[in-house]
Length: 115
Image 1 (cartoon, rainbow, N blue to C red):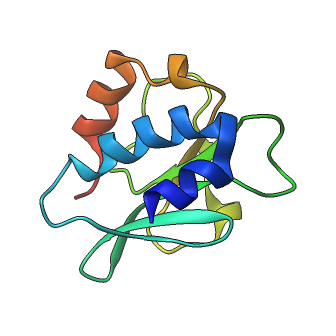
Image 2 (spheres, rainbow, N blue to C red; image 1 turned 135 degrees about the horizontal axis):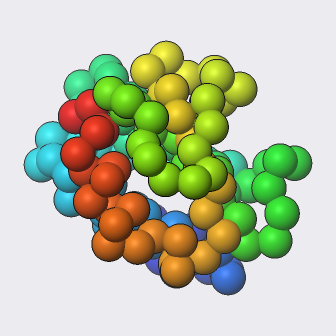
């Protein structure tokens, strides 16, 4: 399944895969589903993250990532994710490349995500 997605995403694949690996490593209970324009991540019935890789709000190799967070991270670029319209997904950020997924980004998100 991920191999098909890799072909579909092309240049977006490195950033998507890095985020995907980071999210699923957060808890052994995380499951995910891949849809035509996004991937959703959840524990039981609670969504903990969503990654949009297609859509009119995205340009170039951008990904739009929403998280279920306890508090807004102190990282530039995070905004209210109400526009995503997913219960529990409260903050989002646009990722332009793997360079945006730094150790500091991962550490901060790990500390505030609602698993």
